[in-house]
Length: 304
Image (tube, rainbow, N blue to C red; front, side, top):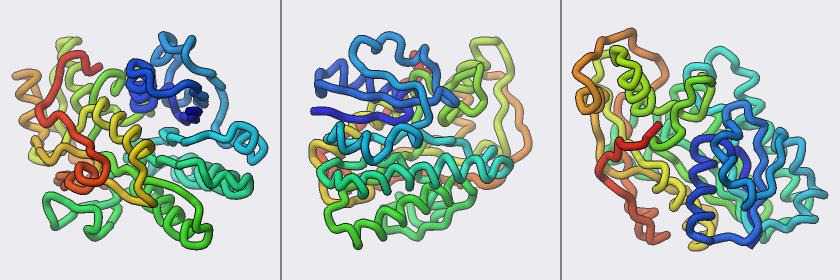
């Protein structure tokens, strides 16, 4: 099999590469990353197993490139993934998270690469402040931030385009709150996700006080990045036509609980706007459709 991974030097992308290479799941892997949010340090141990292109994926994935390579799947992790910056650098985030993704999808269509499965990294942020818990895929979608709106916009395009181009194949994975190795990059504030778990552990390592936004009672469904990686792979090999899937554990923890697990030194700061009070996945669909399973207990060792 031959696959393309965009954003492969980032948090989730690099862990996905570890997962498929360690399990010898794929014979040929092409990785594209512009290293804006990722870093070569994340994939330097994999260079003998991948073909790495340092570039913006939108500049590489032309119709000619896609037609020549005939990928079995494209795993799209590339994004500017943080909520707060999406309020400030609005156009930049829209271009990265919508326009460039549509450019890739458009070139798939132009090249008639309808055997290529497009596995899209979406987000639970599209649910906003849901009133249904655990939240199912058919819940009302009400994004609270530009980032969440952008993720939903691409999902809507995929639905619309696949109604017109009947052979277009895609899966949208709505990640809840990924954490794990490489989630926190202290050199890059735009680094993918910057999970609160990674941030707290980094502050603990430096003997700093943990900073909790708001009252800390916001609850999150934290999903380990290895389980996110397996969800991506199963979306490909157990592909079901054009589906959305929640990728979460179905278990929630408050930010206060997480802080107390890590340190007894913490303080409260100003609440951040645009973030849901609760994220809580109903994961029954991905379990039933794709035979996926996940670790429900938190694994705090080796998270950074």
